[in-house]
Every structure is written in C-alpha cells, then in structure tokens.
Length: 278
Image (tube, rainbow, N blue to C red; front, side, top):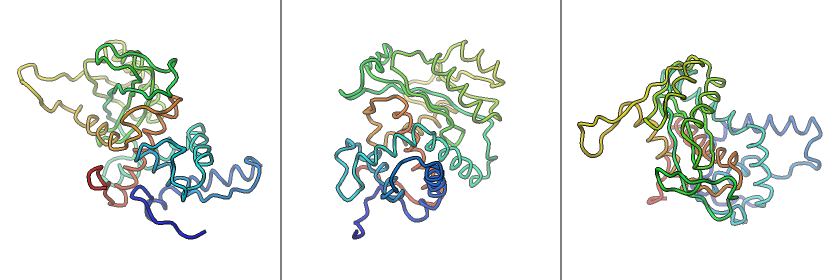
C-alpha cells in the first residue's frame, strides 16, 4: 500500500515512540490469549492517527478519509481501548513523564476540580442527557480534576442535570484511588459541604475558592484559572465542542485522548496547530 500524505493530527515519530509500547503490549496480550480471531491487518499507528483525526476535526466516524483503515475497524479499536482503560493508562503514564520533565514529583499532591456543561448532538440517547438549570444547557456535564500544571488526573461525564456535588464525590474517589498522594484540591462555589466532607474522609483538603466580590468584571481566580485553561485546551479538539458520543464513557475517553495528544506534544516540544492556522 503506498504511503499516504500526512494530516496535521498525525503522530510524529517521537510522539508515536511514547505511545507505541502500550498499544503493542495490548495487541500481544490479545494475540497470546487468542482474542480477535484472524491476524490483525491494520497498523496500530494508523488506527491511533485515525482516532486523533476524529478527535481533532470532529467528523463522524463514517466520514473518515479513505486512506485511513475502515471506520468500523477504527471505532472497534477505540471502543476496546476505551472499555479496557488503555487511554486512561496512557494519560496516567504521560502525565508522570510531563511532571518529571517540569521538575515535579511524578505523583501529584495538589489538584483543581471543576465541571463544564455542553450541548449534545441529536444522536445522543435522551436517557444520558439532562438540563443544567443554572447554565440553561440541555446536554451533558463533564467533571475533571487536574494537577497544578493543568494535567488531567480524573474525568467523569454525566447528564447535565447531575449536581456538582455528586460529580465531585465520584471524581474525588477516582483521583484518590489513582493518585493516593493527593492531599489538596481547589474548587469553585458550585461544590458544597458534601464534597468538602467527603474529601476530608479521603484525606483530601477541599478548599472552595471564590471571586473577590470587590473586583468588577473579569478577574483571574486563584488556582481555578489552571483548570479553565485545561478546558480551553480540550475545546481545541472539535469533537469536544459538543458531545457527540452515544455513551458517556466514550465521551470521557475523547477528553482523555485530547489530553494524551497535549501531553505527547509537551514531551516532544511540538506545537498544536490552531483552527485558524491549520
């Protein structure tokens, strides 16, 4: 098969070197276990490139360009890697490498937590949607925890009607399990005493940070600007401007993939093209 022309979303050799070992180990484990039937015919790098293309451009799966593997195969890999936690593992490993690169301990001790409500597309099942009465958005709510560099530590996607308290409790459980060194998190006023008390039970000090009432108009809020920047990074990936996923867990995986893309580029000192310039 002739080599295709590259897309801006494609992995460089350096970034693929960071991701390939985990995917290759996954394929070997499946082969050894006799899972998957016939011999795999598609390169893992091309599968991952196709997933990044969907994540970055926002197209439906079936609209993948023909020089990628068939969209059904690409989605099959995406679903398997989502279900088996491969994206979560990649994000965890790359986060540790980026933290070390910045002179931080590999395991974080402090974090920031926030939620974001987004509209959904028409294919999303009504049972997985809801209404965020405060923001007047019908759709889903994303809850994320980041470290103080803005790197993703935990993610949860729910109906928009679910309270920040309920999401916060689940996120704290996730983050404390994956990162047992966490002792501090900053949140906004949408999180109430239930989250503060639950954090205390987990050994995590939850501090509610609010805007200075004396300051008029926009102002940078202590610590919370970090996670707002992370949400901005995520929204550079058009698949995440609106929630198109039929399953909330797949939606969480799309967020994780966007962060994997960000982390790999940080480690290789590569830049991310903006929508305007490519």
